[in-house]
Amino acid sequence: MTGHLYKSFSFASYPENMSIHIAGEEKSRGNTSLTVHLKAGSYKVRALDTNGSHAEATEDIVVLSDSLNILNIRMKKIFLLE
Image 1: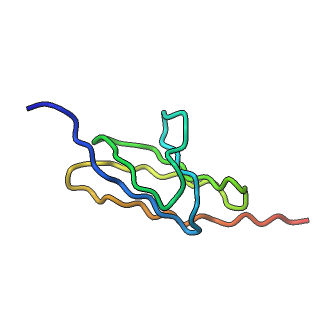
Image 2 (image 1 turned 90 degrees about the vertical axis):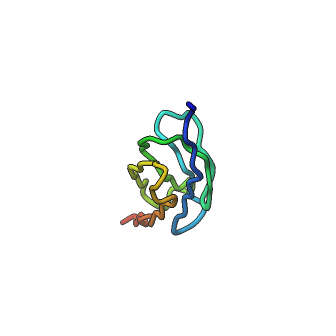
């Protein structure tokens, strides 16, 4: 039997509604809280605040049959000094 292992993977963030991007993909997968199906392998994930009030967050994840299936991201607030 051959094929690819796909696993449900969930992304959550604080605050919510951050855009999730997977390296090598042209478009965002959606906004948190979000569950997607990923093939087994390694991924670089970016969380972006479309409003620009939080810094970009990047994480490396590995998807395996026995790996955790959730990534919680805590975004850092950007403070502008005048």
